[in-house]
Image (tube, rainbow, N blue to C red; front, side):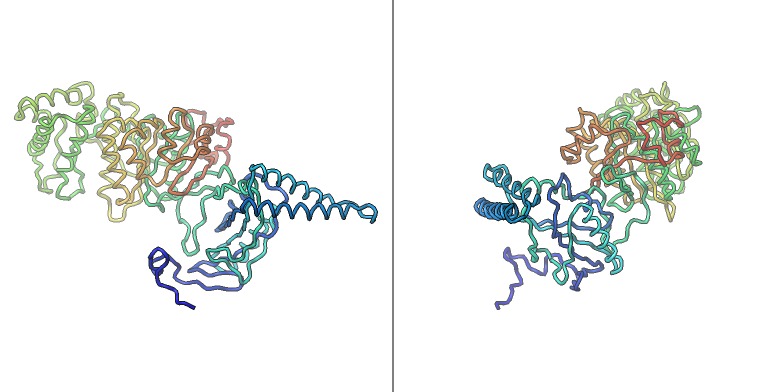
Length: 587
């Protein structure tokens, strides 16, 4: 026998191909690395199958691979096979129905003959084709005892849909169908086997432990199994929740916050409509009402415990971002240069230099920067100072008119922006995010996991610099043991910009609730939704959602206990239990 070449037909080295570290063949299973896999052969099928007849196996709560080998029959071979089968069945039916011999007809044989005749007609007209199909079930477990129990469970599940199975003793297939236990099926029967993907999230492979944390998202809408998700075990902890108004977006986010707190996660929320205040009060969190009397945020504050060389420079750069958001545009180059000089002058006048020893001194205010703009920066400085007047000496000065008031810390901090005028909300959201991020960016030696929730993020996404700041946070959160959760009911503002697409691309956890018809095409393109998934999002009831993460896709219904429901419900009476949230309010 000629020795096998070390290269395959396309020149690829065999040693370079992915392969398990070890493989051991046993009579009733194969051991691949840390997993044990047993194969079951499907040897018997029901006379008729309905749509998704493999669904009970695909939704089995364990590691089960359903393998389907499909070999199409040519038209001449299919015609010959059907002709022989019809002749055999008709002969047998005639022989059994010979009353002269005292025997009665067999109804099963007659039904099979009729089915064969009908199938032959469809094949002849080109309405159907025939395929040789091999169906195998590969059950994987960590130990032999677990494997035996799993195999017994899978066989009983297969029997419930009238599938007969036999173990592949000494004949475990490896990548190819060496058993060739085939059954001829027509197009309709084969098509009814699809989709060939389970509705539940896949179980972890043997040797890969399941997530130690995570929260309950709800119940699977197809299999009624539990959807348990750990955003911290994904590539990053970022997430995005998109929905139209009234679909249960805030309810779901509040429920995840409540359950994340129980998992030891610290949460900070940007709350534009005071929807999270009751939740914060119930769990002993802190609330900051921006726009209330005596509440100030100074954008020039240097964090007390920040001793990095560029800390003062970072604050100057952030002020450029804030000014762009306040003005709704990036100032001209001459005004940006004047602003940079004025910030340095304001810091030096306050006695704060590049020496970290001076950073504990009171920071200058925004009005000190505008004063420096008018002193030594010519016409450009005067123009910019005049444009900033509403926020330094005019109607909108209250938020910036004083040193930063005490910013509480804790397991849940809620930043409310409802009391602010609409013109100030983007800037206030940016300031709150900056204050949160300074805490995340310069943490204690052993920081907790932190989740930063930005509700109604469209208010910030409308501003170019604000959207750019949010995109930077999405990219940097993973390195700081933090996650950014962006929620919005204005899908077009988030998906319609390049920066919004960056935020979504850096979110490993994506949740979609009911969508508006005007936005469904954009949502379908952005998230690569199938036609069925798009129709589902158009008709979803309140609290029904689709979880997307890489190749994982699962639809679920949000569920909550009565106590959770009272804390998470928004525009409804906490004690009310209407049919629209009936499932949500169940324990």
